[in-house]
Amino acid sequence: MARRATWTTVEMQCANKGIPLHIHGRFFKPFPNWKYAFTTGERTERVFLTHITLQNVGIPLDEKYRVSVQGLFQETAIFDYTFLTKGLISIEQSAISCTVHGTLKKLEVIRQILSVLSTLASRIESAPVV
Image (tube, rainbow, N blue to C red; front, side, top):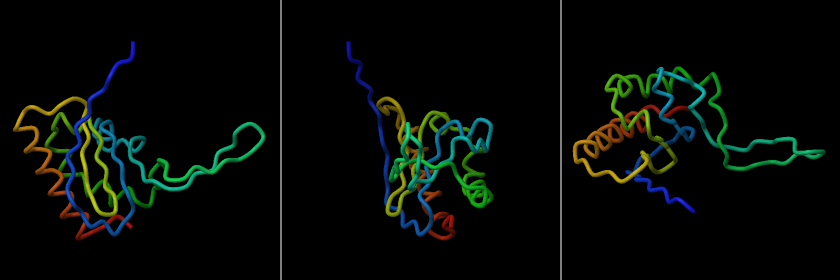
């Protein structure tokens, strides 16, 4: 029997001049857990006797970006919101979003997400991760 999964994505515009970022919830437990911070790009992998190139895939965040990314999320991590540890924050070129499992029904959680996204968008627009 096939199971259906419901996800809720809250998205807003954000002018990101830096690298794309994808922060999985476990990044915040313990903060910062670098195994769960990614950018996107091209990656080559060996498959049997050949090499294949995958485009627009998750790439672990390079060490040179860690100070900037930690500073970007430092204040957010202090709030310890449940959605942070269970969701995915994505920062692309023109948008920032938070995706969580399930349907959001609590107005307070939606307000928290919008507040965090708004704060992160302002920071990323003024000091992009480059």
